[in-house]
Image (cartoon, rainbow, N blue to C red; front, top):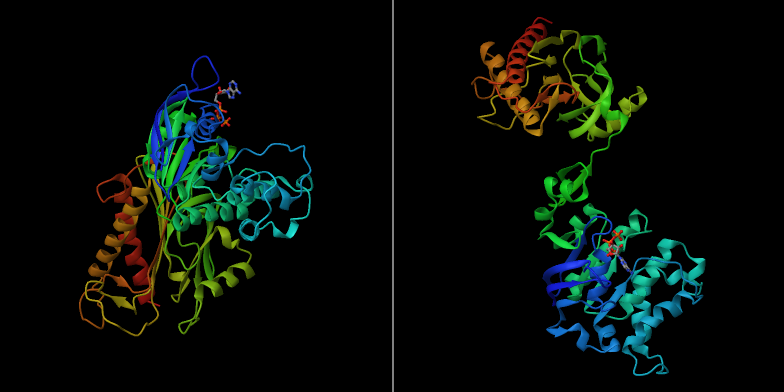
Amino acid sequence: MLKLENVSGGYGGEPVIQDISFSVAQGNFFGILGPNGSGKTTLLKMISGLIPNSSGSIQLNNRNIDLFSRKALAQKMAVLPQLTAHAFSYTVRETVALGRYAHHEGFFQTWTSDDERVLQTVMEQTNITGFQHQTIQELSGGEQQRVFLAQALAQEPDLLLLDEPTNHLDLAYQKDLLDLLKKGTKHDGLIVVSIFHDLNLASLYCDRLLLLEKGKERAIHSPDGVLKEHLIQDVYKTNVRKYPHPVVAKPQMHLLPDALEMHNKPIKIDSSMLSVKTDRIALTSPIPLRTLSSGVCGAGIGWNNQFVNRHVPDDYYCADPADEMQAYLETNGFDVSRTVGMMTAVDLKNVAHSHSENKGVSLFTVVTAGTENATDSARPVAQTLAQGTINIWLFVNGCLTDQAFIQAIMTATEAKAQALKELDIHDKWTGTIATGTSTDSILVAATQQGRSVPYAGAATELGQLIGQSVFTETKKAIINDQGK
Ligand SMILES: Nc1ncnc2c1ncn2[C@@H]1O[C@H](COP(=O)(O)OP(=O)(O)OP(=O)(O)O)[C@@H](O)[C@H]1O
């Protein structure tokens, strides 16, 4: 256990570090964050005993660190400092072997089989065995960083202190190094205390974070507790947006650039951008739109500027429709990374669309609808799929919040169900009124320009536009399809 109580200190004069207290238990990964000059390195140097604290106490395993001899401390604690230019020309192997010195009785103690085993293990873990006979100077910054990490690991410490360990490392080695450290905490009970400039890496790997501001604790908590928009904006004096990691339950911070792209010329999505052909309906926007969709391609949340509703035959079957659709889009000149793609078997000339406006927000709605496959979602039954799908596109000229995106989907779905009810469309398996078809898709795409639209429930201006237009255009599209 590492324990700091009311620690202050610095380089003489006004203390750089002021009244810092925290503890890190065995097996924990602790991150230190803070802007340039906030005192992160100074605090790490105090923990490692390199500079003394002027008040408070620093204990490792219930013992003040200043009571350890240098050598005893080196058996318990290893440090990976910020990478600096090295004048010496040891080989990689010799450099890593120096880490074993902490465990030797005297300078001339012979190299044991245990030393060799540890040396080989840490060289393999850090992937440096291949260049063990080269000199340090011959290596790149990232390779050198891994050698010094191997040296620190060769000390077999209880506590590992790191100053920006991922500096100089490429993406894959950043992950490998942090995975290795995390494994060390979980499997061997290692305590890791590390400085991070990259808030997102700190969030992914650390159990707890300390946020320093001008040498004082501004926050100490779990990543979720520290990575709060207002807190990070206030301490780093820059605009950020917090989003969950797409796979791991950890927060991620995104910078908001003042880039030109954010001040695009105002645009309005409408029917002039729509093209209807027999094999596809397509809409191309001059700027990327923020999208939420259930398309075969480009599903989920994203930014896209091409939208395709492709006609497929009644008997279309493919084991991997996403893959097949991707190939179709590529063949037809669409950039798959920026396209939302849907499929339908209905005749595309029966498409219905309209443009509507309400108090500064406008909406372009496009619907294709077939109802052979109509289902009542409240009474689901296993059934053979017939052709017939309702695909709804909603292009909003406005700036939507995440809530508004979700409410737009809800409002549109409710209006679609009402359209089916009014046209008395039944689920042929249950005999009840259908609510949709079992293969319907939806897209909400917003310019993220102009009026800000916080909500899109049925009582809001956008909600009313969506409700009315989806109800009307879905009915039109169904009637068109029925009259084919
Ligand atoms: N050797 C030194 N002598 C005197 N003052 C120092 C010394 N090293 C750092 N400082 C001062 O202490 C303060 C904190 O520096 P420190 O290096 O701890 O910040 P940091 O948070 O690690 O910064 P960075 O993110 O830029 O690495 C700064 O104002 C710095 O000028």
